[in-house]
Length: 363
Image 1 (cartoon, rainbow, N blue to C red):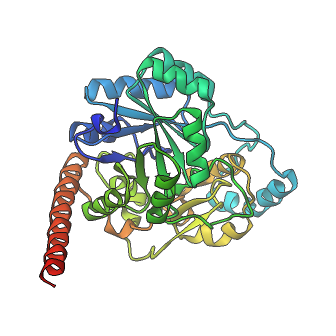
Image 2 (cartoon, one colour):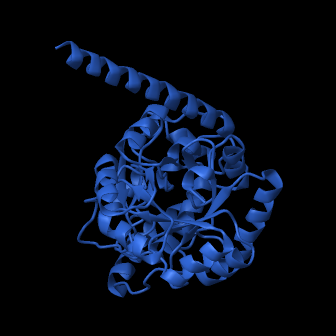
């Protein structure tokens, strides 16, 4: 199976964990000719299975399921305790207790793998790391196409060695969590821009590339395809769709002039993630420790309480750098518009190249 066999258009809907990427959104994208994705992160194994069942009831087109790799639970307890004390004021303000930071970091990974091996889906992708070869061998035997999120050429090479079918190359522009294999506090936000990263990965591995990071228009899809990608993955672009499960405050914030920029922060989860800059990020981001998923669990109640109170200043408003280009279109219609924009951009580029060729010939 080739990546291009999975969808009519080279358009992949990013698996956005936390509720945005449910069956309604993923099915609408797949039905329209893109590749829809369910986000299994933060769900129980049964919760994932129930969404897969719903998905199959909505479409017979290919779709994917994204898994979080288990995380190293070793963090600095002292730093986590300091951050807990710093968040005490938030707990008081929202009248909700802080969460339990000691509930493990495997995200029910093995149980989810078992379900996906026993009842295969067309595509499985991995974030926050790369499985070992036996995992890929088992999925290959089941006929499942596998993709690994990478943020460096070295990570892409590791994915190729392990046996992945493709890599999702995530540039620093991407919204939500950076899918790095290892969260290095020394690196911080020193990631690589998408176009540069595509070139580096293309020179390093022979795997198909799905490009992700700030893409919102068909012309941008054309650009990453021209740079060497085989498909484009869009998350923020689909966040505003009516089928998206994102909170309405989150959807509105994407184009609200009050939120003028995005930044990478550890404030909400303990791992670098790009979101709209709000009060919580400004006040707590500089002090948040590298402790995922402990910080994520610690702040879960605060984020929920802020949403219930209608306060976007206390929510994790994940968004890519292109968030101001968000369009409130039905997901299927958005796929069609993106595909038409891609065709127009390709035709325009072809014409420009022909004009340049004619000019050179004339001279």
